[in-house]
Length: 149
Image (cartoon, rainbow, N blue to C red; front, side, top):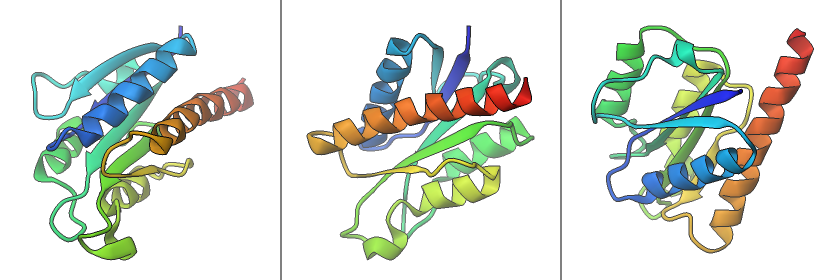
Protein backbone atom coordinates (compact mmCIF):
# COMPACT_ATOMS: atom_id res chain seq x y z
CA UNK A 1 0.00 0.00 0.00
CA UNK A 2 1.20 3.51 -0.83
CA UNK A 3 2.01 5.54 2.28
CA UNK A 4 2.20 9.27 2.74
CA UNK A 5 3.51 11.30 5.66
CA UNK A 6 1.77 14.61 6.27
CA UNK A 7 3.90 16.84 8.51
CA UNK A 8 2.53 20.27 9.32
CA UNK A 9 2.93 23.22 11.64
CA UNK A 10 -0.09 25.21 12.69
CA UNK A 11 -0.51 28.16 14.98
CA UNK A 12 -4.06 29.41 14.42
CA UNK A 13 -5.49 26.08 13.28
CA UNK A 14 -5.77 26.93 9.57
CA UNK A 15 -2.84 24.77 8.49
CA UNK A 16 -4.14 21.96 10.69
CA UNK A 17 -7.52 22.16 8.92
CA UNK A 18 -5.80 21.88 5.54
CA UNK A 19 -3.80 18.87 6.79
CA UNK A 20 -7.01 17.19 7.94
CA UNK A 21 -8.70 17.68 4.56
CA UNK A 22 -5.62 16.39 2.74
CA UNK A 23 -5.56 13.36 5.06
CA UNK A 24 -9.27 12.60 4.51
CA UNK A 25 -8.86 12.93 0.75
CA UNK A 26 -5.83 10.65 0.56
CA UNK A 27 -7.50 8.08 2.81
CA UNK A 28 -10.52 8.12 0.46
CA UNK A 29 -8.10 7.45 -2.39
CA UNK A 30 -6.98 4.28 -0.59
CA UNK A 31 -3.61 5.49 0.67
CA UNK A 32 -2.06 4.83 4.06
CA UNK A 33 -1.56 8.21 5.78
CA UNK A 34 0.39 9.19 8.88
CA UNK A 35 -0.04 12.72 10.23
CA UNK A 36 2.58 14.46 12.34
CA UNK A 37 2.14 17.89 13.89
CA UNK A 38 5.58 19.47 13.74
CA UNK A 39 6.89 20.19 17.21
CA UNK A 40 4.81 17.48 18.91
CA UNK A 41 6.49 14.19 19.71
CA UNK A 42 9.09 12.17 17.85
CA UNK A 43 9.46 12.77 14.13
CA UNK A 44 8.42 9.85 11.92
CA UNK A 45 11.18 8.69 9.58
CA UNK A 46 10.33 9.98 6.08
CA UNK A 47 12.28 7.04 4.60
CA UNK A 48 9.43 4.78 5.75
CA UNK A 49 6.96 6.55 3.42
CA UNK A 50 6.52 6.74 -0.33
CA UNK A 51 6.03 10.51 -0.18
CA UNK A 52 5.96 13.39 2.26
CA UNK A 53 3.60 16.34 2.35
CA UNK A 54 4.80 19.27 4.42
CA UNK A 55 2.54 22.14 5.44
CA UNK A 56 3.43 25.45 7.01
CA UNK A 57 1.93 28.78 7.77
CA UNK A 58 3.86 31.89 6.74
CA UNK A 59 5.09 34.01 9.58
CA UNK A 60 6.47 37.50 10.14
CA UNK A 61 6.81 39.13 6.71
CA UNK A 62 7.17 35.93 4.69
CA UNK A 63 9.26 33.84 7.07
CA UNK A 64 9.15 30.10 7.57
CA UNK A 65 8.42 29.32 11.25
CA UNK A 66 11.42 28.19 13.31
CA UNK A 67 9.73 24.90 14.24
CA UNK A 68 9.44 24.05 10.52
CA UNK A 69 13.10 24.94 9.95
CA UNK A 70 14.02 22.73 12.92
CA UNK A 71 11.94 19.87 11.50
CA UNK A 72 13.72 20.16 8.15
CA UNK A 73 17.11 20.20 9.90
CA UNK A 74 16.19 17.24 12.13
CA UNK A 75 15.30 15.11 9.11
CA UNK A 76 18.83 15.89 7.85
CA UNK A 77 18.24 14.86 4.24
CA UNK A 78 15.95 15.78 1.34
CA UNK A 79 13.42 13.02 0.75
CA UNK A 80 12.18 12.42 -2.77
CA UNK A 81 8.55 13.03 -3.59
CA UNK A 82 7.88 16.01 -1.35
CA UNK A 83 4.70 18.02 -1.77
CA UNK A 84 4.07 21.36 -0.06
CA UNK A 85 1.07 23.32 1.14
CA UNK A 86 0.80 26.54 3.03
CA UNK A 87 -1.58 28.96 4.63
CA UNK A 88 -1.17 32.67 4.71
CA UNK A 89 -2.85 36.02 4.80
CA UNK A 90 -2.54 38.61 2.03
CA UNK A 91 -3.39 41.44 4.44
CA UNK A 92 0.12 41.07 5.90
CA UNK A 93 2.58 41.60 3.06
CA UNK A 94 0.24 41.34 0.08
CA UNK A 95 0.61 38.85 -2.76
CA UNK A 96 4.41 39.11 -2.71
CA UNK A 97 4.70 37.45 0.70
CA UNK A 98 1.52 35.33 0.57
CA UNK A 99 2.40 31.75 1.59
CA UNK A 100 6.08 32.56 1.09
CA UNK A 101 7.05 29.71 3.44
CA UNK A 102 5.41 27.26 1.02
CA UNK A 103 7.41 28.72 -1.86
CA UNK A 104 10.65 28.43 0.15
CA UNK A 105 9.91 24.80 1.07
CA UNK A 106 9.07 23.93 -2.54
CA UNK A 107 12.43 25.34 -3.68
CA UNK A 108 14.36 23.66 -0.86
CA UNK A 109 12.87 20.22 -1.54
CA UNK A 110 12.92 20.78 -5.31
CA UNK A 111 9.29 19.71 -5.42
CA UNK A 112 8.04 19.16 -8.93
CA UNK A 113 4.42 19.87 -7.97
CA UNK A 114 3.07 23.35 -7.34
CA UNK A 115 2.39 24.11 -3.68
CA UNK A 116 -1.14 24.60 -2.46
CA UNK A 117 -1.69 28.09 -1.06
CA UNK A 118 -4.71 28.82 1.11
CA UNK A 119 -5.82 32.24 2.29
CA UNK A 120 -6.40 31.80 6.03
CA UNK A 121 -8.97 29.00 6.52
CA UNK A 122 -9.76 26.23 3.99
CA UNK A 123 -13.49 26.69 4.33
CA UNK A 124 -16.02 27.24 1.58
CA UNK A 125 -14.63 27.29 -1.93
CA UNK A 126 -11.09 26.77 -0.65
CA UNK A 127 -12.02 23.35 0.76
CA UNK A 128 -12.68 22.15 -2.79
CA UNK A 129 -9.29 23.57 -3.80
CA UNK A 130 -7.61 21.50 -1.05
CA UNK A 131 -9.41 18.31 -2.12
CA UNK A 132 -8.48 18.82 -5.78
CA UNK A 133 -4.85 19.50 -4.85
CA UNK A 134 -4.65 16.37 -2.69
CA UNK A 135 -6.10 14.23 -5.48
CA UNK A 136 -3.61 15.85 -7.85
CA UNK A 137 -0.75 14.97 -5.50
CA UNK A 138 -1.83 11.33 -5.57
CA UNK A 139 -2.09 11.34 -9.37
CA UNK A 140 1.31 13.02 -9.68
CA UNK A 141 2.88 10.42 -7.39
CA UNK A 142 1.26 7.62 -9.43
CA UNK A 143 2.64 9.13 -12.65
CA UNK A 144 6.16 9.42 -11.23
CA UNK A 145 6.00 5.87 -9.90
CA UNK A 146 4.83 4.55 -13.30
CA UNK A 147 7.83 6.24 -14.98
CA UNK A 148 10.25 4.47 -12.61
CA UNK A 149 8.85 1.01 -13.39
